[in-house]
Amino acid sequence: MRSWKFWEGSTTDDKQADTDAAQSHSLPGRTAPVGEPIPQPVDTPAPKLTRDQAKQRLAALNRRREGILFDLDQAELATMPENPWRERIALYGETIKVVQSDIAALDREPHVSRPTLPTTPIQIETVAPDDPAVVAFDVGMVAFRYESEIDWAERGTTIARGELIRMTGDPAQLVPADMPAEFREELASHLDNSLFIFATDLRRLADEGEPFPDATLSDLAKPCPICGHWQSWGGFCAVCAERANRRRALEAEFMRISAEQSAEEDERAKWVERLPVARRRLADVDAEIALLLKL
Ligand SMILES: [Zn+2]
Image 1 (tube, helix red, strand yellow):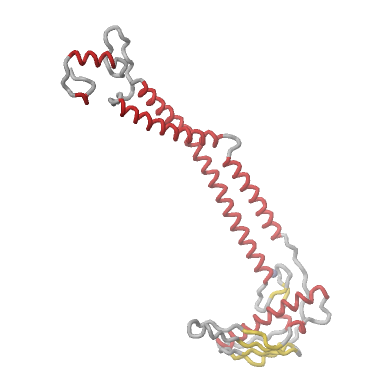
Image 2 (image 1 turned 90 degrees about the horizontal axis):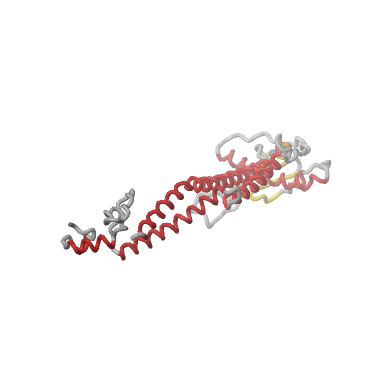
């Protein structure tokens, strides 16, 4: 007969075979000697391994078991009412609430009321668009003159134009005498910006050969229909623009945190899904280890 210990050679005498049978009667798949219980069949054929191979195999199985136990721990943790994922999800939830209330507060910012300005005519004197540009105009009795600064460092490398700089005229002089004290400084600062935008627009119009507008002082500071603050020349509202920027930033924050929150929930759900798999794998590896230990 052929020995089960195939690595010892295929030809052995009957005596050797008998010894083998006596030593290995517990090995699954072996026919039990007379008087011994008949081994139960197993699902998988028993591996025929040397002692060293069996030891290596056992060590590998134990390492695998450690990994499965870790998975099982995580998976069981993920099903608990309290776990690190749910803690982080709750924290993200708190942050989301704060961001939402910031957005709501932004939308609730009060509509202010600013007086309109007199329709004092603006007399355009000179508009020379090319560097060095000159834009000169009178607002009532106040003369303004803007000139472009020449950025020598940039010349020849870019086509960027020098920005207009106010050389003559004080915007504060345009603040009407009857303007309430609390608005005077705000208006002077607003007019400074609005006059710069107006001068830059005149330069652009001259450059494009377009006619100049009939403008008055009131066009430089019209109350914004949305927020009530003064708009600059051309209908630009700095307050609305700043609010829109803040809103965009808050919305981006909201999206980012919401995404992180659902990523946490996905991660938790993934662990929960792994629970039955981890249990099955543990049972499998335990069965395999038990089988090896019988060798
Ligand atoms: Zn506005």
